[in-house]
Image (cartoon, rainbow, N blue to C red; front, side):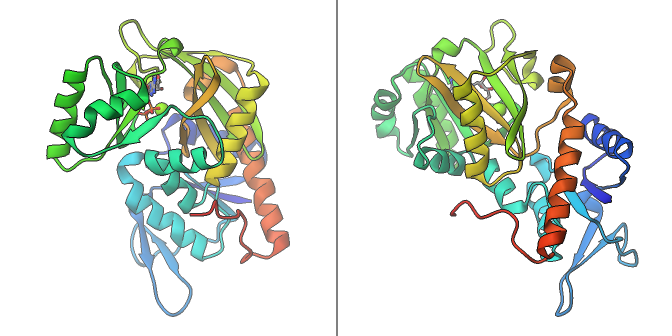
Length: 310
Ligand SMILES: Nc1ncnc2c1ncn2[C@@H]1O[C@H](COP(=O)(O)OP(=O)(O)O)[C@@H](O)[C@H]1O
Ligand SMILES: [Mg+2]
C-alpha cells in the first residue's frame, strides 16, 4: 500500500517511526507537509497538488494525519480534501476538530455518561464565587479551550487569584473553563493510547517537583502501567464517543476512578514507546492498512466512521 503521512517534518520521532514500521510491513510511505499541499476545488474531482500547482499527488491508499495544534485549520482543510476524494483517513477531520475543542469534548463525554472533572463555563466576574462552589474550590483549574502541552492550564490557589486571572482573560475576549482540581492525583495522570478498538499501551505520567501538570513537555516523566479495567473501558469509550480511531486519552486518577480530561487525536509516541517498549508505530500502521482494506472492500465512497452526533 501507499500510505500518506501528513506531517510537518519527516524527522519528527512519530513520523519516523511510522515510516520505519510501514517499511518493515512492506508498505511505501509518502510524508506530506500539510502546508505544502494546495487544494483545488471545482466541478470535477477535488484535487490536491504538492509543492506547486503542476504536481498532482499519486493516489494514496490511506492517510495518517499528524496535525499539530498550531496548524489545525490548514491541516484540517487538507484532511477534508482527502476525505472528499474518498481516501481513508486515520483520523478523519471532524473527530480531530472535535477533540481540539476541550469544551466540545467534555460535553460529548459527559453526555455519554463518562466521568470528567466537574467543569464550569462562565463569563462574568460576579459568577466567580458561584463557579468555585460548584467545582469545590479553591484551588481550581483554569483552562483555555484550545491549549496544548500544558500551556493554557493554570492552578488558581485562591479566589482572589482566580478572579484576577479570569478578569484578565475575559478582558481579552477569551473563554475559559473553570474546573475541579483533582488534588489526589498529585501531579500524576494516565495517558492511554487507543488504536482501533483496542488499548495498545498506557503510562502514568508524573509531574516534576513543584508542578501539577504532568505533560512530558512540562518535564513530566512516564512509567508503564497495566491499566485497571475501569480505566481501559473509559479510554476505549472516550475514543469511540469522539469518533476517533487513534487517540491518546488523558485521565486523572481520582478517588472515584478515572476522570477523562482530554483526548488527543495526534498522540506523540516517543515517550510512551520508550517507557513501555511497545511498538505503537506498527500497531497504527497495521490498523491503518486493515482499515483501508475494509474500505476498499466496502467501496471507496462508503462512510467509514459513523459521526458522533454533532
Ligand atoms: N482538573 C485537573 N485536576 C488536576 N490536574 C489537572 C487537571 N486538569 C489538568 N491537570 C494537569 O494538567 C495537565 C494538562 O492538562 P490538559 O487538560 O491535558 O491540557 P493540555 O492539552 O495542555 O495537555 C494534565 O496532564 C494534568 O497533569
Ligand atoms: Mg493533556
